[in-house]
Image 1 (cartoon, rainbow, N blue to C red):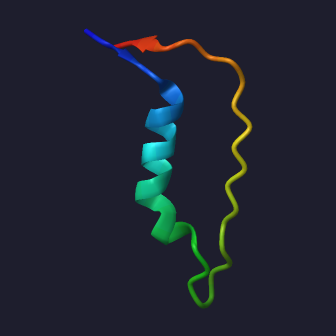
Image 2 (cartoon, rainbow, N blue to C red):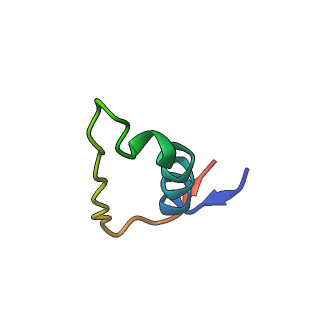
Length: 44
């Protein structure tokens, strides 16, 4: 068990998807707006 910063986890997943979120010819780009609240680390 360890504590994880949920913001780092979300940002990591978004970085993996970054290429797919860009403009791809017939598909428009997807803009991700990050408005995080105050969350404490999650015990996993």
